[in-house]
Amino acid sequence: MEHLNDRELVREHLANERTYLAWTRTGIGIMAFGFVVVKFSIFVKQIALGLNTDNPVQNKGYSSLIGISLVVVGIIVSILAFVRYKRNIHFIRNRSFNYSSTLASVLALIIAIAGCVVVAYLFETAR
Image (cartoon, rainbow, N blue to C red; front, side):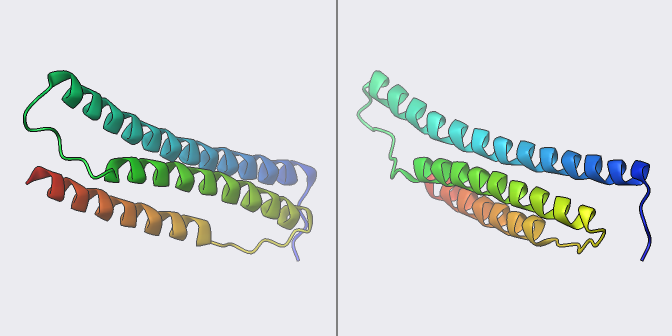
């Protein structure tokens, strides 16, 4: 097994930290997007009430549900990022790294599903 010198070990830890911070930013970004979706839904309802139109905006509450779900996904991503960060610290210290793309794969699947839900919602509300 190859031994890492001190400089290489420091590089490995710093790379792990950069990756953790990138995942944390991703989680925060997803939460922020969910927050915007929920707030936009509230804004549209307020505009419809303010205009006092005879044809009120038909809202079944899906945008709030989508927004809240995105916030929850962001929280889960942040938690999983921390777990992965700690796991990688253990692997670096023991000089045995096992690569796993599970977090990235799960996140990609969740984003794809969320995207399909948003597209279906947009088609439904566009009619």
